[in-house]
Amino acid sequence: MNNVDWVIIGSYLLAVVGLGVAAGFRRRQGGEGAHYFLAGNTLTWPIIGLAMFAANISTVHLVSLAETAYKFGLVFGNFEWMAGFTLILLSLFFAPLYLRSRVPTLPDFLERRFNRPCRDVLAVVSLFSAIVIHMGVALYTAAYVLRGIIGLPPEATILGINALYFFIIALGLLTGVYTMLGGLLAVVWTESLQTVLLLVGAVVITVVGYLKVGGWNALAATLASHPHPLAAVAASKITWGTANFLHLARDAADPSGMAWYSILLGYPVLGIWYWCCDQTIVQRVLAAKDEKHARLGPLFCAFIKILPVFIFVLPGVICVALVQQNAFSGAAPATAADTYTFMLIHLLPIGLKGLVAAAMLAAAMQTCSAALNSTATLVAYDLWKRWIPTTPDHQLVVIGKWTTVAGTLLAIVSSPIFGHYSTIFEAINKLISYVAPPITAVFLVGVFWKKATGKAAFITLVSGSLLGAVLFVLDWLNVYRGNFMLIAFLLMVACMVILVIGSQWAPQPLKPEALPLIWTDWREPLRGDPHGRGLGNYRVATVAILAIFVALYVVFR
Image (cartoon, rainbow, N blue to C red; front, top):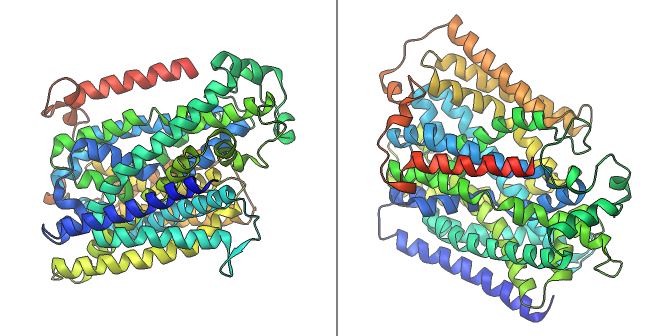
């Protein structure tokens, strides 16, 4: 890295913190609680879509998707394109109910549909996911990458602290500062800026690598005619070239473990929780100006989700081919996890290295800021105001700020656990596969079946969470490690069975306030006011996006 690169990185960090602080001053001109936690319900669909995409994309994507692609090809791109289908579900079926109830949090929604105990369980699980799954992994990955860019060995220290932990602390504190001051408005402002920077950096490194490898035909031919640079991968049963490595659908014998049926069954469990029921992501929809923007925002995010396969996954495949072509004079990534950093250092000129490195930091910081704001909202509304309903808005904002501080510290402490797994991508998705099933089951059944009861939903949430925790411990201790996608599907089926049987065994009358939160006919949300013409009509936009994703799967199947 040249001094110019470090100036770019430093300037970026100052600009982001400054923008977040400016959003804090802007926010003070409006109301207190609504503006701090939900940006005054003023968000329009472009901001919602970009902010949802930004909250999802972190350094984990830049590093782990390139890492898995270096080892297994494009197959993990399924996690990006399958997200498009779950975002359509959010737009069509969940967003209208959330806007109809005008709740600040999803646990609040669950209380209105079921009861308070359900709200409490979801609040605790949501706090865990925000701090550990969203923030923890983002900080760990960003620190790992930053250490690699600088070229520090694992044992290196800075100011007497291990370099990895030093970067985790520094990035966590910087993000915590502007999130605490500005609230959700600071988050969406900085996310919009950081998303643009992230996409520019990712596109640059992809285009440079693609041109250097010689285009698609040269890429496929190189992969098909050379052994893989990693001996362990070369000895596996992967078929190179267009026959398998460049396609998304795999069979049960594929070393990636991502057979087509495990993705088809397991991803919806993870995706519906993540995109439709997780506070960190859905908070942007809750802050929408109206139903039109709440519907179109997720659809716009779905459209953007086309890009990651080409700009986050494909670079890992390109790196394999470049190493096979000896483009780096015999050099190669030390491990698959170093793929993206290796390409950054070896492909980009001075200045662009700093830009892409700043984009990687942007990806981590935007995920952390989103998780921090949702954590503050959950604690203020679902814990504090739950027990002290008379708390004024001003006091809730103070509580939210202190929660941001505490959440930052907890994320810093928890982030090193992701080093336990063989890949970062495996770590985050395994955690989600143990957390998501009971929540996905309760939300799906709850909004489509009016006979689902609060007692049964509470039992489902508690028993499903406990079962997931047991499986996580067994996995952590290496007692049992199955296909996490199939495990997630089986857990969800078990939770649905518990919910249905429990509701039938001990029926309860439906609360009047819960009636508007249920679709009595699945076609009902499709009959609503389209709110616009052309692509401004959510029905037209949905059909267009579905057609695009189907076409992509036909090409890359």
